[in-house]
Every structure is written in C-alpha cells, then in structure tokens.
Amino acid sequence: MISPKYFREIPQRYRLEASRCKECGTIHFPPRLICNKCKSQEFETVKLSDSGKLATYTVIRVAPSKFSQETPYAIGIVELNDGVKLTAQIVETDLDKLQIGQNVKLVFRRIQDDGKAGIHCYGYKAVVS
Amino acid sequence: MKEVAVIGAGMTRFGELWNKSIKDIFVEAALKAIKDAGVDHIDSMYVGSMSSGLFVGQEHLGAVMADYLGMNPIPATRVESACASGGVSFRQAYFEVASGQSEIVLAGGVEKMTDGADVTDALATAADQEYEVYQGITFPGLYAMITNAHMHQYKTKREQLAAVAVKNHRNGSKNPNAQFRSEITIDQVLRSSLVADPLRLLDCSPVSDGGAAVILCSMEIAKKFTDTPIRVSGSVQTSDTIALHSRSSLTTLKAVSTAAEKIYKMTNLKPQDIDFAEVHDCFSIAEIVVSEDLGFFDKGRGGSAVEEGSTSLETGKIPINTSGGLKSKGHPVGATGIAQIIELYEQLQGKAGKRQVKNAHVGLAQNMGGSGASCVINILEAI
Image (cartoon, rainbow over all chains, first blue to last red; front, side):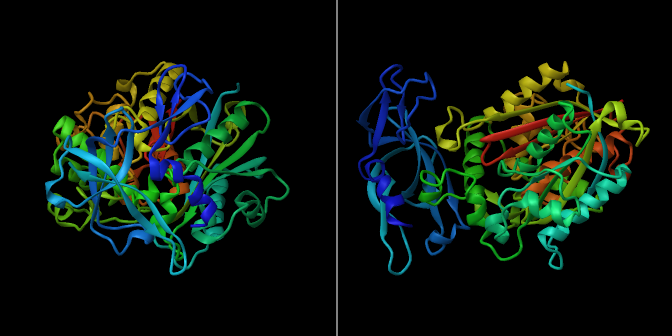
C-alpha cells in the first residue's frame, strides 16, 4: 500500500474519528462530504464509541492474498453503541463461540503488511468483552 | 420512447475456456447473436465487463471489441457495474434504441477470469476497499454475513441454502451452455469445503470465462427480422451503499426491493404475473434473499420456498434460474446479466428445450453488483 493512501485514513483507523451531521445528527463513518440522509454539508468531528454488539459474522477460510497466511479468521459487522456499524476482524476468541448479539469492544491492532519492505498497516479489530 | 424488441441472441459456452482469449469469447458470442437476428449491420454496441483490466490487463474494451468484431467505426461503449455490468449494458442498449438514436444495437457482456489474475482480490474491488476489504473481507464473506443474519432472524436452515444449489444444478444439467452440467445432492453441498462459514464451495458460483450478446431494435422494424420478437416491457436500475455495514438491514437488499417496486409500477405487473425469473444467485443465500425482495415470497420465506419446490422448473409456481443460474451455468461476471436475458429470450420464444417453462409469457431478470450496491431488473414479454 502506498503511504499517502494509508496516511489519509489514519484519523479514522487509529482514532475512530467520524463526522456528525449538524443538521440531522447522523454520524458517518468514515466521514463524508455530504450527508446521505439530509444532504447537509456541515459536520463536526466526533469519536466513535468503542463498544457495541456483533450484528453478524463469518469465518474466512479462503482469504484475499494479503491475509492468506492468517486463515481461518473471524470477521463481522459490529454495531457500536452510537448506532454506527463497521466491518472488523474479531480476535482473541474461539471461532465456534461467536454469536450474533454478543458484546464486543474495538481495540487497536496491526491489520496487514505491505510486502517485505513496505509499511505496517494498523487499525481496529474487535474483541469479545 | 419507442417500443423495443430483442430479435437475436448468442453466447459461448461458460466455463474454463483455456484456448480462447477475451476477444475470441466476445466476438464468438456477438457473431452468433448477429447471425441469430439476421441483421446485416449494427449501429452501436455495448460491452459489459466488470474488470477486464484486473483479469487480463485490457481496458478500452469498447474499442477493442468493435475492432475485432469488424464493426469500425460504430460507437462502442464499455459498461461497468461490477457483477451487474451485463444487465446495465442491456439497459443502455435499450435506451439507445428507445430514444430513436440508433435502429439496431448489440448489448453484450464478457469476462475472462482464468488467465491467472487473483480472482478473489479482483472481485473484492466491487466492495469498499478502505473499509471492508482492508479488514480482510471477501465476497463469499460478505454473503456469509448476510447468511448468518438471515438464519438468525428468520430461522433459515443450512439445508435450505443447499436446496438452491441442488435445484440450479438440476436445471443447469439441461443447459448445453452451462459450465457444470452435473446434478448434485444436498449431502454433497453440506460436505463441500467451507469457504466463509456457513457458506461452502457448492454454495458459491464458480470462476468462469464466457461471453453473451443480444440484438435489440425498435418494435417497428423487428418484424422484418423475426415473427417472434420479444418485447422489453421495463428496465429499472438502482443503487445502495457500497458497504454492507452501512445498511439499516442486513437481510434485505434494498437496491433489489426498490427496483422491484419501480418495475412493477412501470409495467403494471405484480409479482404473481411473472411466469419465471432469472435472479443473481452468486451465492445460495442471494437467491433466497432476492426471491423475497422481488415479492415472490414473504420476507423470511425464501428458504422454505425453495425447499418446498416453489421455485423448481418441474413444480414451481415461479421457476427461478431455469438456466442453471450463476451457480451451475457459470458466472463470467460481465456476461452474466446478458446470459440472463438470453434465458428469458429462449424461454419466451419456446426454444428452451428440456428447460422449457410451460406457458412462459413474462420473464424477469435481476442482476446485481457487489453485495447489492447496484441492481438492474429487466422484464421481457412474448407478444
């Protein structure tokens, strides 16, 4: 991954920064330039809740090339307490104990690497809380 | 807007076509369609392709195919909407004829997926790169998450998912152009290897090469070429959030339900008026969810409907994927939407052989991109 592409996403991936629409209050993650609910273009930066529930999940057995050494791994959609949903790996848990509705918490983790001399790429994963 | 007809169709067999290039594949399908229609020229052409750039390193596909089809200098346009590229290609051709801009237009689609590209990575470009793929998700993974949510909410059973694949293979075994012409059993699906829990290999459409093309013209001139033109009664396209996680429901594909509402209104038809349908069964769960979102069954009843035979060619009140669907016929991504139109065309002309649906007058084709971020529905009718 070329570094500017990675660098641009750091506020969201490292600090869970989102944008709240000043008109209708919808929180967008990642931040958007126009609200897809009310079309307003006025936002304030907010930090997402790091706690929520597992809305759905799967266990990846056939992975994209960047993750081929990590199978099997769990990944799911987490609904955070502020209503925002995002996709994240679920780690440090038994794969056969995953359940829709279970409480999870987002933690800071390494996500992938960019080849032998490339950069390490960080972000959020979920652990069962 | 002029009334528009389909007057010819052609496709390659779908499968691993090692001895054919992407150009050979498209041109073979297009020549068959032109011959079938009996036209001596085309005024314009559309080429649906999801990702020829990633799959074979070739872009500028409109120009490439117009050249190799020997059609220079006609306008040739490549259309991309991920796995819905074919259906959208058809819709663009429909508009060009309906507007009166052109008389005879070819709508085609093609994909060459077996030339060495990493198919999982290439297909994943139809999802949100920064917020889905970055985390390690795949397309089977996205549909597996829909599956788990659907099973949780509606008690859909693992065997019901398998019944989709079994039915589509049974239909595909009767289709000479299908990639897999072998029947399979529920047990074989349940014992196939896991790809993304709970989806197994035999829940997934295959990696395929293939091309498909149809010829459209105005109804005014269609009778010059055929006694049985097939009318395009309606065409609707919709979009939804690119990321699955951004949607309020994980068990309804809103792009599909919205498109369905619109096309029923446009055509004055109801779900009960549709005699048969081709739907986008990229994974077994997709056929179940889509058959609900098209209004064929109540929400949550798609699984039991397939299990009870309500969608089978032999006994179904609404036979679904008589061609074998993406699962058995194959899924060369950009060609899929056009191949669905070809199944409608053959059924409505009474030329579907062993797959023929009795009293087939109205057919619906539903084609979608990504995890449902784009959807196109076309309805064709015999006149």
